[in-house]
View 1 (tube, helix red, strand yellow):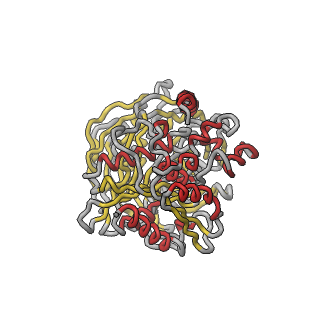
View 2 (cartoon, rainbow, N blue to C red):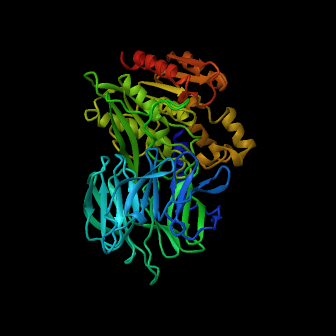
View 3 (cartoon, rainbow, N blue to C red):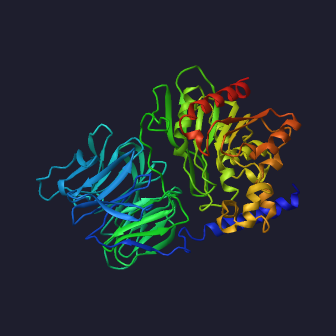
Length: 572
């Protein structure tokens, strides 16, 4: 590609990134009132599968809202005084304010985990809560000025003493910073988490200067680490450095908020006026998946003793935005091990690294260090942010090879759908500077030794992606991801086109797809690779549809085929 075109693209990328950062709030979508028939709606929780839970504190009821049906229903009629909820690890945790305890819901029964004596004066009643990646629980005691931690085993200790009227509470996506809202002074405090249940370096993070009314209330956080807090009249939003990004005004006083919907781009707000929803140019943090064996047609997400998980590892940073990955390391064998970067799909606009948890675990059981990467999606940052993040993940593995027992000369990648496209582009264009970014370890190579593309498009400047860009521009994911149509910015499409970058230097590249998922999609890429002398091929799975790689009965066969391919091309 011509140097002049690349220079022009660099300017264009800056413009696109700046426009994406103009507002974290989707100004094209007005605040929506979903329901108002509550006495006081409080701390909501999204279960990651399609349901929002939230309590009505005064009415003593627990509600659920399912966006797919648009229905708000009473889920638990005699819930008692619940002041907040939080969903994680497949469980709904409750701040059972009326009974001075933290509970978990089992079916429709509250089960006490731990809490405070319910007969002391003045009362010590839990207000809000957040669950960490280990299953530990932090909750606030507003009256006594404390934050308490409950270990995964149910033991309780004081995490923070002497904070004035602590109310809302949340954790940064990497779990390293605990944020607490001080209600009366309307301050947000940040604490470094040194280990689960222990914090240090308490410091003022932000302050609400909106008049005499009280109110630093419920909190949440998005995937970029932006902090959200309900104030006296608005939801306030700060970036991880404490810079105010914006406010969302609600018709009545807001109390709490959380992210939800299938794409995790809706901010749900609860308060005196009921339940509201605001679409965002940001993505909420998905709950940690339930640790379970095979469930229906879904493969197991149980981490066996033979694999050590390292969740939410910071592998790079773009400005204040930390990039996170889940790394799984085999415990059997001497190592160093070959490594596989696992890239989720979602049309470049949606998805989450937890979606490939089962695949990452299954490959780790077969002797690979696996790295399921989270990358910036299109509504947060336009192309080339996502591919730059994926390349940064490879560089991180090389730089930190000793720590994670990786052989830095044996790194491959596998991705599905849009993740497959990203893996194809990683394999074909490690030499293109515009796709590398500056998220870290610039002195290391992002070159892969082998790659697997599962039903992802290789062509962007031609074929079905380009056709959709022209014929159905409003519904074209590529137009949203790249920020332009193909006719407005053909250079962008060419740069993102993995097929155009294929060459003799491309590593061995295997294609996988279901029988009913257009197996001929990448025939031109296979022909080009064969002509260049690059090992390639295709595996087609009978009766498989798009996404079959994450379902039974195809999952085990696909993992076995991945293992065979990587053994041949990574471990030689």
